[in-house]
Image (cartoon, rainbow, N blue to C red):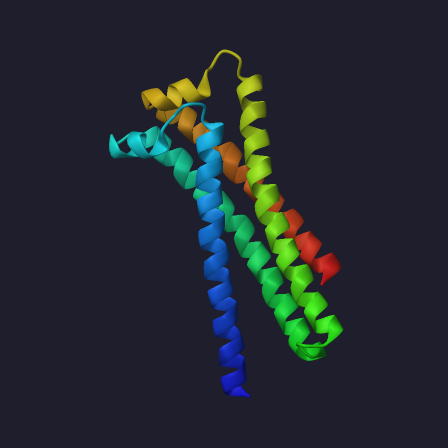
Length: 166
């Protein structure tokens, strides 16, 4: 039984790693679409700390949401094991958990996009993306705060989805 539990834990870890890498890649790609003509890779190579703060905040935000989704996936896998992993209910538990994790990733990226667009509209006197290009750390911290705050809220929603479905 100990070996079976270790194997299940290893599978869960591998799934978590795959989803984390995919989610971070998607988050970085979407950030490139949001930041209006800022080439994050070039700015990072130049040492633009403001852009580095934004990239880091997106990674932290994605990690928060993926972590809660992975927890839900673990619950789904454990439920599937208790029901019989190849039973209809077991397979359904895993499918629901994976869909919930994917939904969490999509919601996180969409919420970050929406939050930054709303922030841009609320602060009419500040062109956030231009300020990032200039290396304005104060603006980067403001934007990072919004990104991480939205992720924390989305994380709670993902945990709620897990609790209600699985």
